[in-house]
Image 1 (cartoon, rainbow, N blue to C red):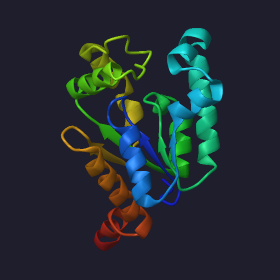
Image 2 (image 1 turned 90 degrees about the vertical axis):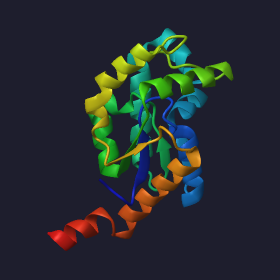
Image 3 (image 1 turned 180 degrees about the vertical axis):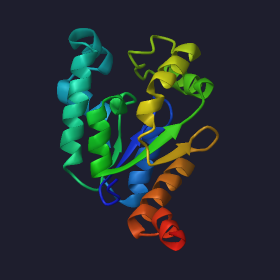
Length: 190
């Protein structure tokens, strides 16, 4: 963990990484990067198009290349794609270049949020299908549990606003950067 580096937000689609991340970046006066948005901008393709035309492996390579670029920069709030931590190399890059915060919510809440976004015209994730069924969300969450365990901190976004999540992200960042919080507890009791 590098508390002076980036703040990486990981977690499943629909847990609030983008909106809470933007708000946290604003609070911390740091640049914000949404990896999915940047990949779409650079490739001039939607993520479903990349999956369909180039395949999932090509998309995962794009994620790793972008993460490598971002890990060489400092002090950014980065919203990662839900599958970024699956790759061990990605987990290692994030760990060495920042703090990793996992945002979580129940499969039912994720289902509601994703389908609400779809009704507003936002693209669904290719691995979930058109209606993001709850059982598929549960399966993907279970398959990613080990990958998501790389997080240094976890924030449950279930029943709180994006603003409240952003305040928690800010607090975690300031505690880890300020030399108090966890490290002080260890020093006091160690």
